[in-house]
Length: 481
Image 1 (cartoon, rainbow, N blue to C red):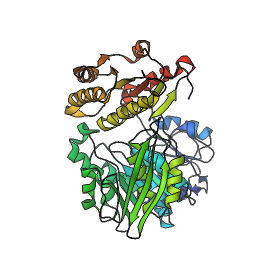
Image 2: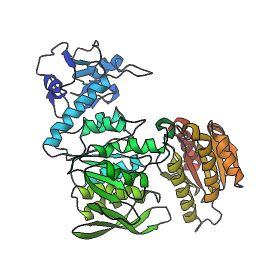
Image 3: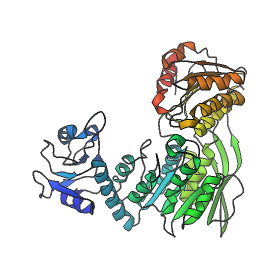
Image 4: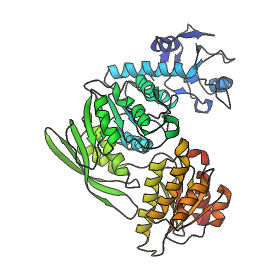
């Protein structure tokens, strides 16, 4: 945010019920530009937001934040830190009101706010989108997966008078969550990627998931843009839930809407990096540009089209969009990270999270990769280390067996499964005739017998912690990135 006095910060948060309290509360002390929730991120002049958590209470770290340069504290009660405090009933809600005020002010002078949601691919698409908009002007986007009631306002608090574009990634655990997040950042563009079976246990089914995801376009203004996946029927139906202009993206036949964005002549190279002709059509005709992605996986075509559609909708040039996509890199950790070991083994680390749709995409990508390595290593195989997919509710066992069957059907040679539902993955894989076993994280690496050209996929929900397996594998034989 812009540098402000604490009094100005309080005014910006109105009509939230907050109180300015403490030493020098009425002084013209300035805070900003940084707003932080971790004292280790504190820098000179920042505002520290103290959030109570399950393991630690942020209020206990207020003095450490002040020692590092914080000049104000936003919290739920006063601390020993000798700086002005803004006190509220709930720190996260108070930070949300601050974000709302900051974004409202910057949108009034022309900043464009874009939000993206979906059952899978949000972070990868956000990263691609950020790199497109950065090519056009100053852009604020989340680091990693800051997509909840803390991450969205924390990201929004970074915008200032120079920011041209704010990108928000929006996750949800139930109805109303995305509506709340959109209320903070006042979207000009809402993007929905897909509606899958991620978190069906929390939402209560795919239909409920679709309804929750549709909140990203429900409150858009008539001159706003709803960027929707025409290839996903549940997303396409969201056109009825918005009054905004429609920008369709997809690889099927696109009709209607104010903008249509697709890909022609998609090709994959040996590293499973797609290239294609980006096509944008509207009432004025058709524009095209060549894209050669540096990110990995066939599913990145859809992510790229979503990012491109959002950028084209707000007036960015198609050549700029295509060039930015072609130069884009994978920014967030443990998402399709490819490590080439010195011995020729490839490790595909996609261990940040997992649901049935992202699991299928990861397995398909690993198989595509091994096909590329077989030019030099004819006997190359795919070995999949698969962990639990969490939050699937009563469908969990069925969907884990399905994942095991899919691995076999796609051509995976061997499966190592980790977690409470590992037996179901193994049952599905062995039913289709491939080798599979239940393992712990610690005994996977010693059990692997790999040859040059083999591809090892590491995929599971964050709670399973398979990134440790990826790190151990990468460290063997003097691996090189």
